[in-house]
Image (cartoon, rainbow, N blue to C red; front, side, top):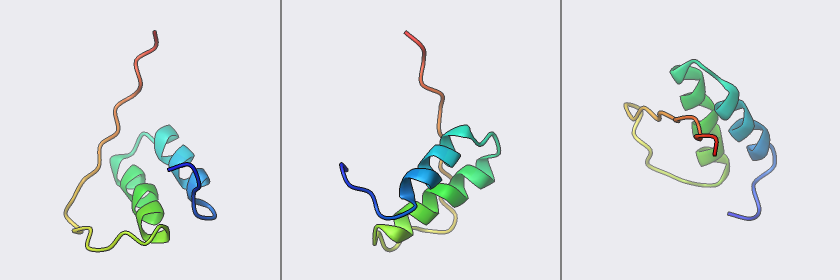
Length: 54
């Protein structure tokens, strides 16, 4: 995914920074909708885990 839709990078960065799972879900859904992904069930919870520092 080298090219993102307008505003997607901001939403993805916000999802990474956001501690609230509901807000993470909101930002990720915005990206999915902007990129034309359809049929994402409303009851799907997306949980992002921090990237381990090496």
